[in-house]
Length: 109
Image (cartoon, rainbow, N blue to C red; front, top):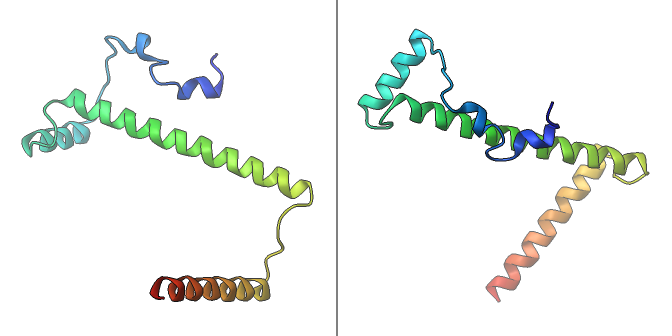
């Protein structure tokens, strides 16, 4: 069984997909036909390729998010981080406003 990271390597499954049959529902076929008729796609295989590319992109993004969550959890477990309260959010908003106004003033000078 491949490791999860291996699933994200482009072409990892390419040799096994040669000649693969995909069964589409009636609705999916109708959707593809509409896209072909509209000129969006030239053949049904194009839709399958696009769907796989979008899935791959979504899975890469998901893996990145999970890695960021793991990193955040690790930093919190080491005592890093910031306690979020209404007051701390007000202070943060005020700080952002001050920096934005200062940047705007510097650009206009």
